[in-house]
Image 1: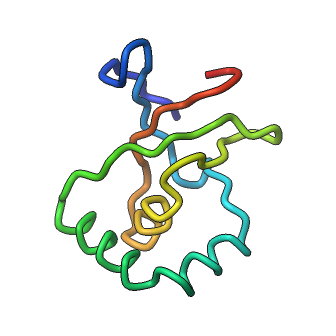
Image 2: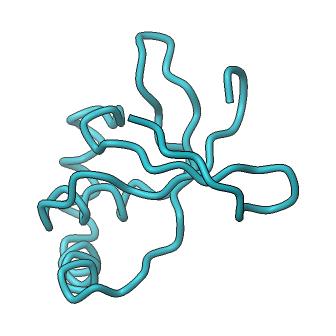
Image 3: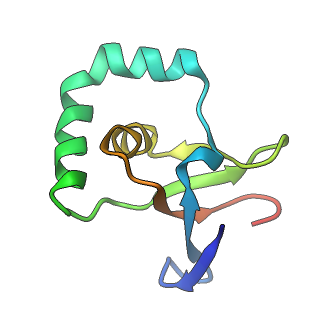
Length: 95
């Protein structure tokens, strides 16, 4: 489900993307969690407390869905917080 609204930088649309449509390799998630666990936990708590996060930047993935260009920590924290969607800006082809 893509819900578009304008509000990004000039000419960019902000969309709400379901987290299950985002592709981050499992090895990348494991590496980030080992290295930055405390940061992820702070972000998770911020999300659960209703604080607004900076939008992530996505690129269409060749197999469907999106690759995370910027914001992997925020995506992982949102998943841990049980959020279903995240605000994003899509760049690249098919954007």
